Image (cartoon, rainbow, N blue to C red; front, side, top):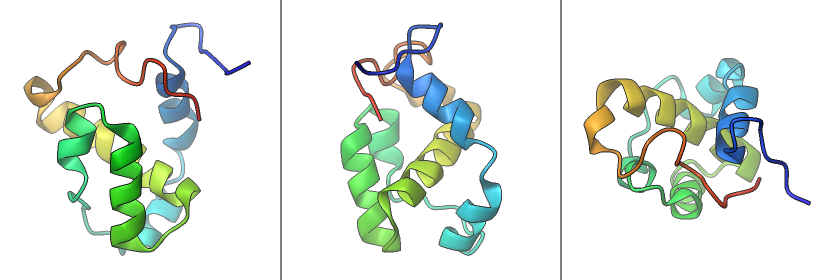
Length: 96
């Protein structure tokens, strides 16, 4: 059975558990902001965003998930009105 966090959003749990991996993210991105998946992130297209990051960075799925989660948090601060759904609705039905 897929994991669901107490808040009801499995994606939120994934974000919380990956947010501490900044060294890994810096190694994959050379410390540069990666915005190639922003449209996918903003429109809740998680799989497409992960694929875009993997193709662009040539990284593993795990590394792409770390980069995606970090970029998600940046976009929530910098462009909160551009998201198609709320933080609690984001990733509903996505299990990693």
